[in-house]
Amino acid sequence: MSADTDQTRPLTSSPVTKAVIPAAGLGTRFLPATKATPKEMLPIVDKPAIQYVVEEAVASGLHDVLMITGRSKRSIEDHFDRAYELEEALEAKGDVDRLLSVRESSDLAQVHYVRQGEPRGLGHAVLCAEAHVGDNPFAVLLGDDLIETADLLRRMIEVRREHGGSVVALMEVEPEQVSLYGCAAVEPTGEDDVVTVTDLVEKPIKEEAPSRWAVIGRYVCDPAVFGVLHRTPPGRGAEIQLTDALLELARTAPEEGGGVRGVLLRGQRYDTGNKAEYIRTVVEFACRRPDLAEELLPWLREFVDRQDGAARG
Ligand code: G1P
Image (tube, rainbow, N blue to C red):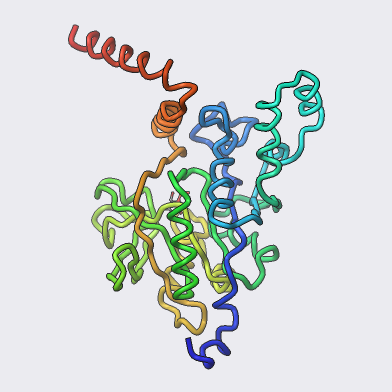
């Protein structure tokens, strides 16, 4: 990069150190379970979903985590805080394993909180991070998406470091599914797993989708996104959409923090935001655990056989 560019974009080289996790949704798809418990706290085996997301941020080198919370989110704060009474009780019993598992979440990262007064969409949630993030690039991790490894986010951070601008994560989906996602038109770059994003549409109908490339819940944003979000009008669902702000950035000059690249997902992504996928995630995660697989797998096989038998009559 030339000295000139450095002068116009003094922040391009500032590293990504902060993760923003929007967790203010109402969780209506999981009612009544989410009446008093945030959906982010629903367990995947024995850990709340949001802990996996924080672990991924930390594994990608992001130790400063800002949660955008809303109504009845106190249990998230409690989960990432010390639990002295519980710890004392476990200590007195000499239950070291459980004690360590309880301390793990409070030792994981520096977790901060800001409240999103009213649920006005993902773009608005991200805007709530402005004061904490300041003039630095930052990652956004959506709690509904669990990604198998931290490689994706690490790669996205690397792409940001090399090229500046913002970075989205992309996954190819069936045409019937594009309406569930932000959808991107892309052009190849010299790199296999990286594309240039030329268009973005939030939850298009099948006929209007620019491609089958769906944006999944990992982003690295240039701080210029805040300025854009301030003037982004409500879009799909009458909500302020991050997708719309990123589209504007895709059409903005690099000197002004513009440019959006996509990193293609390699590996597994789990969507815990809907019931069937949530259950599938729990089963898969449980089957990967040595302490559970031995008991669970034979039962699963037998259960499926029994179901098949019943279906055959
Ligand atoms: C959000 C985004 C959408 C993205 C999706 C990924 O939608 O608005 O662009 O594709 O996350 O999970 P939501 O699923 O929160 O409605």
